[in-house]
Length: 174
Image (tube, rainbow, N blue to C red; front, side, top):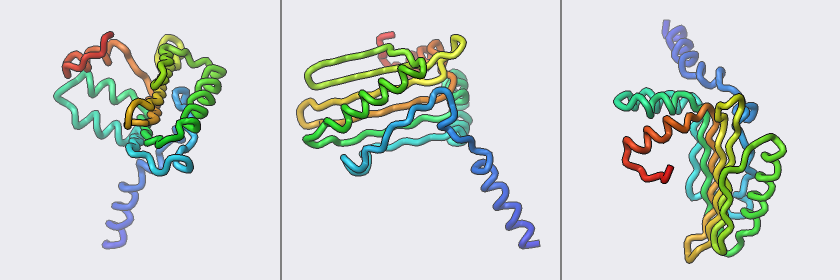
């Protein structure tokens, strides 16, 4: 009986892992090369897969719009690096990713080229549905030299984003 219970417990624990899809096959996925060899471990690293996002959406049952928005996502990936004095590897990655995803029909929606800040935002649309969002920011202003790479994968409804940010009193300018 103990072996049966242990086996059932392991099956329940491992079932979500066995069912996990390769996120790199999703339309909204973008491969950010690893900058750890240049900058060390990211100062912030968030890697939420669909299972974790499903869990988060269920925790937020009080806000239906947020729960619905999160439930349609397949992954959220964030990497933030301190660049130190050398921003070239991060700039090279930004250029490489922008070039690669444009070939895959990603649409550039924001491009900012200031002296101390470079920003690129792209979206992937399939049949009028946003499948992915990529945000890349290189900021070398003052002492805060950071490289930020964000990839949100899954169905993203801009109307829901506006509802959620309004409800949370987040000023987006949209």
